[in-house]
Amino acid sequence: MDANNQIISVNVEAPYNVTVGWNLLERLELPHKRVALIYDSKLPSSLVKKVSSHFELSIPLPSGEACKSLEVHAKVLSELAKHAFPRDAAIVALGGGATSDLAGYVAASYLRGVAFYNLPTSLLGMVDASVGGKTGVNLPEGKNLVGAFHQPRAVWADLETLQSLPERVWKEGMAEMFKHGLLEREAAVPRFFEKSDLEQPDFLSTLARSIRVKAEIVARDPFEAGERAHLNLGHTLGHALEWASNHSLSHGEAIGYGLLYAAILSRLENRSTWMGKAAEFLEWMRPSPLPTRNFEDLIPLMARDKKATSDGLKFVLLDGPGNPYTARVALNRQHQAFQEFLKVVDNIEQRASASRSLLPTPEVP
Ligand code: GLY
Image 1: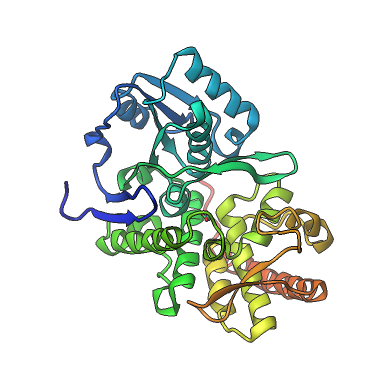
Image 2: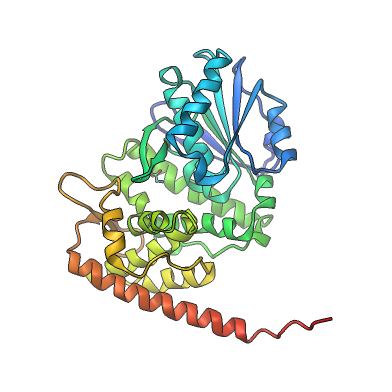
């Protein structure tokens, strides 16, 4: 084990480690005779081969959110059954957040639950989806509406897998790291790392710290009876935007927008002042355009948020970084916040297009 690798313990009922570092996949060894690898079919084939050579069966998945359906779930279960995978077999997920959500749900449901290991290959997967045992699929009616809590037995986050990540996908992960920093406290909000910072030692330690924020919350509240809902900061509007865009807006981009909206709601509700930081993040991220400017389109989508109870929808707000809480917010407040949100987004877009027009026009040879 490389001395620079970091290990984060997730102290749930069956504790497990998240190892973050370099060259982890080469040394993979699992205590199971039969293992099925479930992987994102768009990953570089050299990476898939490196891992699949250890295991008996490899099942490719449609890339991204397209794999998170009951149809794909049923197909993968049938594949395992055709190969008579037994109860002491294991599932290994290789891919981003969507792959681990689907593979984890397969592991949770096949034979009422088999062992599960995560090898996240996106920053978002490393910092969020691979840790904490939330697994599941989408329904036509909304995101993540079917699933189970099924903790992995171990997670190996090999930074080498991030080398081929497109810039836009890298920034998605930074949205979750930004969120974890806000949940920790103001001083913990990380600088916005570029992909070119991947090999810097402070990137590795910041990533490990961000995963630790999640691991500690999950250990205190594994089944989201209370505190774990704070990890959904920015997700109420974020999921609605992602769904309204039919996923042309990525999850991380939607969370970037959602964090700004949560910051504005927090300011209106409790005068909290982290909006500038959220706007700065969105300006750095340069997400795809909003799918709608009409709040009425988003209200029914937000009503299907998993944080909604029989008493209605709750938002996660921050009474300043480090002090999250959940609260109901009056509908007129939500509208008011959305109008302010649109103004901030418009300003950011205007600044971005002004800076683009200042760039020299490329010469035609
Ligand atoms: N992604 C939020 C959670 O795992 O609770």
